[in-house]
Length: 372
Image 1 (cartoon, rainbow, N blue to C red):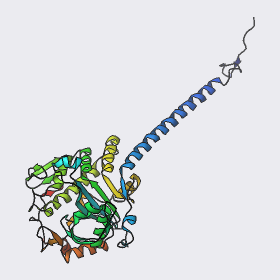
Image 2 (image 1 turned 90 degrees about the horizontal axis):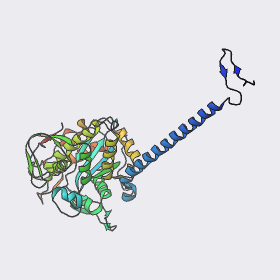
Image 3 (image 1 turned 45 degrees about the vertical axis):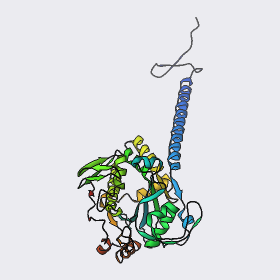
């Protein structure tokens, strides 16, 4: 009888005939190749989704080339590493914005303007509000329809945006202050509503009841968690505080900005990627920036450079103004206070106490709001 031959190892174990030797390792190698290929495909797919999400968000941001729009006639940059950022809140009452308040006024306006100065060292920021009713000298600009817009004196500050857009507002602010704006960020109020809803609301505290039939805001004294619609009513409120002028609501806008920034900072975005994307989507859809910030990467880099700033320590100041002698419904920059304020920002120096006092107060020295 013929027997099949087998090879015996040192311990008497049996080994497969040489013809079958190595078949199992080749199987294993094929399995690992498939695993590696699958992982590669997954990574490519994930990368594709990531790139799509990045492109989607990046495409939301609208950018304006300030150097091209304004030209070289601008103040010099700070000799320090300090930064100046102009933040505009644009408010069109048409379409989605109009439905939020029942207002159907045509055109877009800049209802909120803040010059945020971040001093060298990036530790404590200062926000200077420019009242929308301030009479200013508008420099020569290009109108929204592309025509030449000549310089004009004694025009309302918020009319500059409606006629010529954000670049002309930057040029106007630089002209009145002598402070170069390194960047500007504009947020549309309809998008602002979506952002507040995306982060789950913003908590504010007011020290008196506010009932404003124009904005629609009705809240009692105390602490409230405002949703997007209520937040929009809050920053638009003027008849429910002070003398009903624009000056009365500036304090509300300043304090809400701090509460909003504080809420964003404490959100655990990394712990909730879905929420992070939703917030980023809402925010970028409502943003217009200068070209130096008009991408997620640039915004993130700028945000990281501001990481050491605690919003709760931000100092808020209204540009010192006085009531205009020709039109008591308008204000003009008060001297020497406003000059001292702008000089401190230009030199990246501490703002003197005298530069923080405004002769026109809007009928009240208290804003009615505080951070929580």
